[in-house]
Image (cartoon, rainbow, N blue to C red; front, side, top):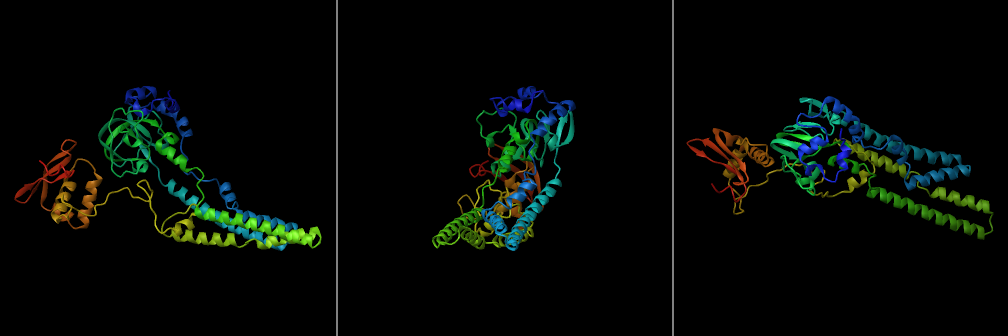
Length: 439
């Protein structure tokens, strides 16, 4: 059986290969894979699966709490105090360091466990063809060569080439940031086609906005576009501004301590004091200059901030991000920012001359948006929500019946609905500004 890696080694990407040729390479066809072929391909697919947790190991998380320069200085101070025989100071400093680190560890570990529990409540299933029959399998058991069936609201389980469609439109905002659904159809795209323009591909992690279709799976797990993005997010994150500040402070403090220790040692030697006593005095001074309580104060403050945010149902995975989050006065993101909601809202209605439109315009638009039966359209949904909030949606449909509909097409660039309301019939139409006014 041809493996997914075999496709990866080709110079021609799957969206530029005819679907029947792809099916031949994957030993598949319109009836999908056989159950035995799917079982044989499953181990290789699972080996390429993306770790849904994407989290740091427990031991690495614990060690990370003791890696900042200030904590390392305090650990060095503990060792020096022990060498000098000052076990009380050594015990106090070590206790402070351990309690501070364990507090941060407990907070971040708790956030990890909470995230794992949330993920565990979600079990996504996909409809695939096996031996010519539609069966429901977990996302993790979808393999290259499977033929998947998708409908409205379904999440796409893998990257796949479209085979058949019925008004299929996908919301690809998770990958591209665009809120408008993208029309999908069978065919072939050029090799250099950008991701957003690959009309014959459906992508893992996106979902069906309207219509239905079938598609041939060509990539799963880390080999999908979504998987590549997820893998890049697992790389070591850049230090936050707070972490950079604490690191800089620790390095500055260590330099000052070294300079003072050297100066005091030289002065004592010039005064002809014993070398051993001078060295011990300098080291004692270094221990006294260390900010023993600083890590504990910082850890407690950040933990309290995490608890406050948790009351608003937000999980903080990295405590050091709290300070940067609290220092923000404005958050600016582009269209791919994760703070966006991926939906369209109607805020005002304007006429073709740019002036405020009368309420009748919103009523007519609401009739067109709510009575059309072509496909789910985010713009129509926005109009319907705006009409409802303006108390127009309910009254607009009262006593109104749809007599017929002319679907949207790219020649007229509009969708028309013929309605009966009272003594006369109306024809609300939706489309572009230069097309909705014509016949």
